[in-house]
Length: 281
Image (cartoon, rainbow, N blue to C red; front, side):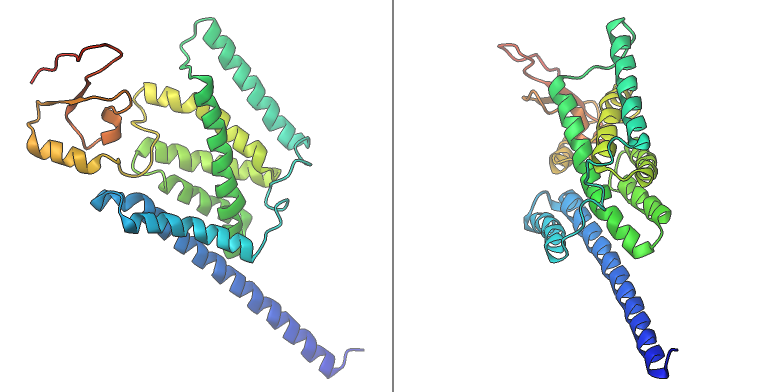
């Protein structure tokens, strides 16, 4: 039989659990808010005055807050999806099999002459590592915060996917691809939580989708945030006419780094030749 004192203790424990849960939700929500603010400050702060102390501080604090929260509350990495013991489950095995089949079909199509945009092995490796790194942060860290704050996994997946799309501004096609693709990856992740499988899927899809979208001019650039040459492009546009051509001595700088707002023609002076290409004034 439960006495009055026992029931009081139980109610106190339940209240303590609710308060602890509410505190965890509030803490997770505040972390998301602070990190999003620091991210956009560290990326879009360059829009106003280039890279300065405030921008560098925002980038440093973004990393510091993430590392500090991990040290303060060391997470259960397996629960967050950093695991190898469920790679062979039917769901994850199906994803890996589909990726292998998809890759083989496209490679064969490229060999027989079907117009597939090919990239170097080094670029392919960078896409794979980028996919793994992005999913480690997006799914392994931010999604866990959203789940704690919202208490519903599918709602957390939707919120995190929207955030993932928004951080890819300013290119509209890239934002839509990131947001929709992020939602698909989140839903797949909920079926068999494995960061490595989803990160590999992200990387493989990027290898074939991004070069194709860029080559078809559907996507202007895969970069996020303002161009690092934005202050320079503003000066060029202010000091030149609409028919002017900008001559750049670089193997890497091209028109896309100025973004869509730059409407001057770009000519690279050196293209593996010993003398400059004549540039019309």
